[in-house]
Length: 163
Image (cartoon, rainbow, N blue to C red; front, side):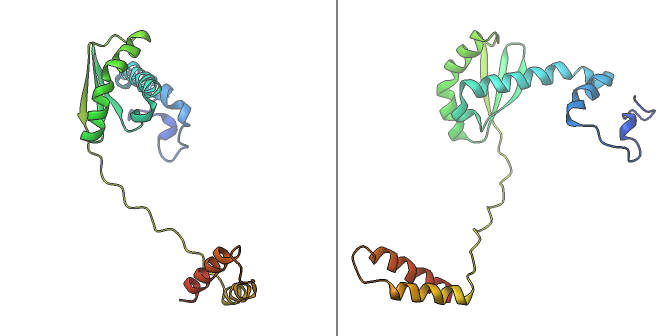
């Protein structure tokens, strides 16, 4: 299945890309990458275990390294690191119950690149006929305390769409 260039045959010269479930078989098919497969599986299992123990704060964190008996977690900032530091004994104890033999858990701040700000919310543009219909509805409502909030909301909506 491996071509002379070291690529899977189905990736050579525009052939179809393998499905996502074939990633493990791809890693297992290459001698150099096959050595990484157990470590990748272990880190994935450890990531899931940590997320199950501390779901509210572990969404921001990731397992960076797990060597012998030391776990290194990546955290996005010092604030999350401070909060997580107080919970490390609980995390280590719960992982030990699940069979993970860890003597130390270290935190490493991993500043991620800033994401672009979200786009502004879309404003619905009402046709002029709809705006005039709303204005006439606001004028047709009887002037009572029960209708006061509705009349003011309609007036604000009409004013915003006439600008």
